[in-house]
Every structure is written in C-alpha cells, then in structure tokens.
Amino acid sequence: MADQTSDRFVVAIVGATGAVGTEVLNVLEDRNFPVSELRLFASPASKGKCLLFRGEPIPIGVATRDSFDDCDIAILSAGSAISKELRPWMHATDCIMIDNSSAFRMEEGVPLVIPEINPEDLDRHSGVIAVPNCSAIVLLMAVAPLRKLGKIKRIVVSTYQAVSGAGAKAMQELEDQTRDHLAGKPIIPNVLPHPIAFNLFSHNTAINESGYNQEEWKMIHESKKILHDDEIVMTATCIRVPVLRAHSESVNIEFADRRPTLAAIRNVLCEYPGVQVIDDREANHFPMPCETAGQYDVHVGRIRDDVSNSRAIELFVSGDQLLKGAALGAVQIAETMISRKLLTPKRGALATDRAPEKVTRSS
Image 1 (cartoon, rainbow, N blue to C red):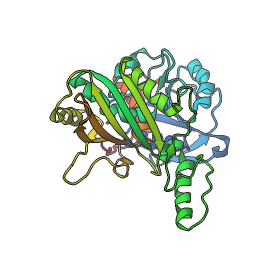
Image 2: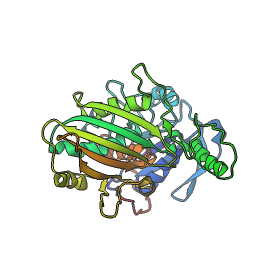
Image 3: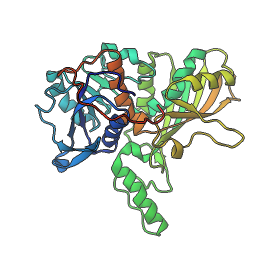
C-alpha cells in the first residue's frame, strides 16, 4: 500500500517475537504503513530485546494496563487468552484491536473481515476486528470471486496445512525431525503430537461431538459469517503436512444452478485482487506451497469441471498462512479502515515523520 495519507498512527504489536508477529513487523515496513510510533510487546522472556523496524531498533516490552494509552491500533498475535485479557485495557483507551486469535471471531457484533471480500463489515465495528482462520482466508479468496457467476450451494474442502500454522517452534521441529530421520535417529515429537517429518496427520485441535476438529469447524462457520450466507452447505477435512509454510487446499464447489464455463471462472479469478491463477496443464504447473511461501497473493489452479457432478467444479489453492492468512490480513484491515475513514490518529497528523518508500510484493 502506498502511503496516501499525511496522518500517521501509533501502532502496537502484541506477540511481536512470534512467527506471525515478526511477519506483521515486516509487512508494516514493506507496505510503508503510516507509523508515527511502534510499540512491541511479547512475553517477559523477550523484555529488553529489540527488533529492527525501518533500520531502527525497537525495544520489546511486556504489555500492561497503560501500554495502549495514545495507541491507535494494536495487532495481536499472542493467542486467545492474551487477547481476552487485553481487550478491556484497549477498550478503555479507544485503541482499535485487530486480533489474529480465535477469541472473538464468532462473537456477535465483532466483524470477521477479509478486506477484499467484506470490507463494509468494518463500518460496524465496536473496537475489535477479528482476522479469520488462516485456512478459511485461503479458501475464500478463491471462492468469493466465483459468486459473481452464480449462487454457490456447497463447498467440500480438504486442507494440506503447513506447520507454520502451529508457530515458529513447530517449524523448527519439522527441520529438526527431518535431519534426525535422515541421520537414522529416533523421532520424538515435542511441539506437535505426532512425528511430522515424512508424515502427515489430522489437524490436532480438539474434536467435537460431530467428529469435526476445531480447525474444520472454524472453516465452516467462519466462512458463512464472512460471506453472509448461512445457506451454503460446507464440509472440511484438515490435515497437517510436512511443509514449512503456506497452506494448500483441494476445493470442490457446487453451484445452485448450472456451473459457469471454465473460461468465465478463469476470468473472474484473474481479475480478483490478491489472487493469481497458476493453471498450466501442459507443464503440470499448478499452485505449490514452495511458490506461495513469502508471497502476498493466493494462487489458484487445477481449474476443471467435476465429472461426477454437472453443477460442480474443482480447484487447488495455496497461500502463505503467515502472510495472507494472518499478518498481511491484519495490516490490510488497518489499511482499509484508514481508506474508509474509520480511523484517525489520536495525536493528529505527524507529517514530519517520513517513512522510506518501499517496493511491495505482489498485492
């Protein structure tokens, strides 16, 4: 995002040293977000350390009741318990809370927002905006454009989720287990419940009475809230795979009436912001996590008719869980709030605080 405002904002990052928090820091810099002051918070173990932002070291503190005085925006990536604890402190100071946890996603009155899909929901916020589940974001970036072509009746999705979704320690565990396996050493899981190197397993969130794990349940119910469509029938199967970062998904989409042509599907996907169509049948080149890792856009391919259902199509999708699925999504929400004039700095414009121009990655 080019800096198109003279207003600059006091921004806090909670969970700044985690896998998502460090990406939030990078995205703010990469997109030249209008920051006047940056406040970083993490656990007591990180207190006193520094992270670089625009070439300057920023000290890390531990959030207290006074940490958000004069703060305009706080982006939280520290888990549901921390988000719930800090919410009343932020509310008391009118600090806008953009939360990456699952704490408030399904709460009535809390917007659950993917800016390309439902930015108008931000107009009704009451101080908290929730970033959706990462797998739901990757899914809906491919599904939402297709609603222009007809009403969607049913979605069946199977995920191939990278260990980045479980945090930095899980990513390190995959690397460590891979080395141990190749060296003939025993594999002993510590972060994840099962060996992940050269293995895959069902997503390890708790299973409900219907037999769905929490990740699958989130995808189903969050998607309906974001799309404002309770009539869509959905089912999901979520699997953890030995990939460092970027989730992938196999998606079957059934339309209520006749399915669109493949040409029409490709056209709307190509025109949609934040989506790249990677669909080269001749070269067998389709979305891959090794190509979406580190990228802002969600890749969509394997576009084909479902031969078992005359109203359905098949897609394969991949997107970076740490970026579009979390950090980028949170920063885009803040950008959208500024563009919709929902956010003004408490301290007023600080035009003398100039930020360097940056060359952004694909939007």
